[in-house]
Length: 308
Image (cartoon, rainbow, N blue to C red; front, side, top):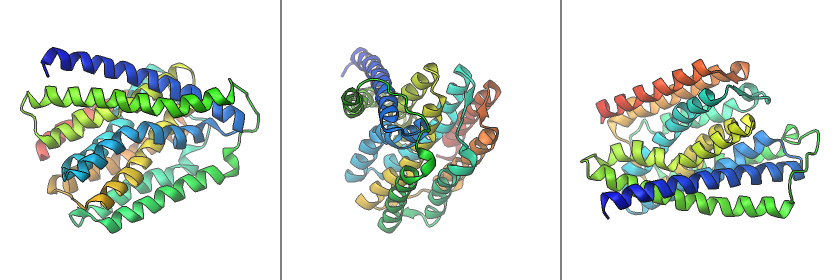
């Protein structure tokens, strides 16, 4: 593959990610209106799972191939990108207001996922038993959100045909997956020609690349005035990444956790989860918060280069 072809595939991949994000948002909103489900719940479950598929495919494949560093780095890097880089960018585009009380109802799962990743990694390995525990928790998370009476909207807002909504929701993940593959493959090709290590690629290029569905979906949702979808997508994606992706990859193959990850990456990830919840306490993220999150992400990447 030539450098010019890699750049072309990168552009095509980003375009597909945007189109997939737009389709997923429209489909999710259509389903929410027909089934009278609160849009935040759609963002925290269906859309969060769909936009996490690229991370899942990447991490599961890496685990099967024995490249466990990439699996762990992808989850950690994607989660940091979600709540620092992407959420910060969303807040810069337009101040984010969350109507649902995220702090009291959704923060436990969000914070517990990061806390469990930190605790389970302290012994230096994510074992199959750890993975099973995480998979059980993702099932419980989805169950309690869906069966929560507050998940049902008080008013029905039919938007589009039901069949069209399902079609967009089912087809968009395929577009997102293809876009992510093109984006990540081309980015990895470019990075390898610059002599970057696999861990750095995993926590940066691959993590950000597989997070592009979250970027496109969240930005599109924000531009459409659907901030609840944007925030629910990002927070829900982080929970899915740890419970579903890290859990599933650990079941496939136990994954060692390096000293740098135990001493820096996982603790910082947990701290950022706390920071985001603190910012969301008043249910609003302004542009100053967005700048803070983006600067925090930059500091995290500098720390990664130091500890790895």
